[in-house]
Length: 87
Image (cartoon, rainbow, N blue to C red; front, top):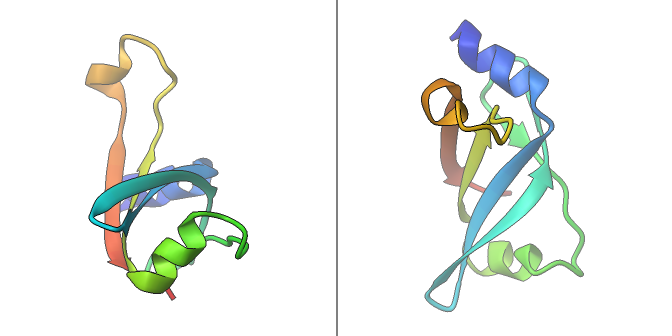
């Protein structure tokens, strides 16, 4: 649990996966997690592609990781995927 808290506290960006017309769509988003880790928050405007995707289908996945774009990441990087419904 501590490793998850540390990851969520240190990272500022995540990959948001949404769905539109039978196709997956991913977006880079800035996020924050609540202290109890029950919710992950991000904001978007109506002008983004993710907004209508979320309006049509609230199911999402959010990938958060600590990679540094080095070869060693394949063995050392930590990643977590959160799934749920956007509100």
